[in-house]
Length: 88
Image 1 (cartoon, rainbow, N blue to C red):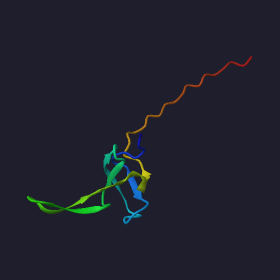
Image 2: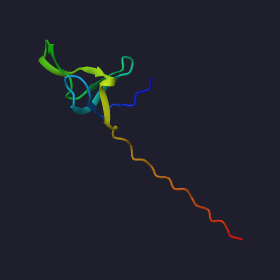
Image 3: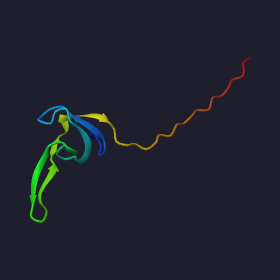
Image 4: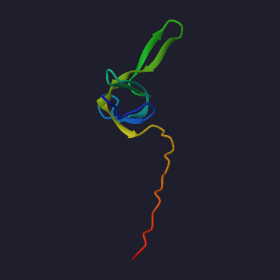
């Protein structure tokens, strides 16, 4: 299934404990239809070398709505040439 939300897009959480929070999409798991959003569902993770870390967890794709798309390339504007017809 093609997802409308892309990496780098800004989304808002619409359900769950983080309802109302906005953030940028960090990672997408297309197979499971889950995404990571910056500052949403922050989980504590213990690493032997670095100790306690705070990381974002995956949330379901259906629990967010798109606020603005990713930083897109500048769109090229094309102009059509108008042909003038001779009046008879």
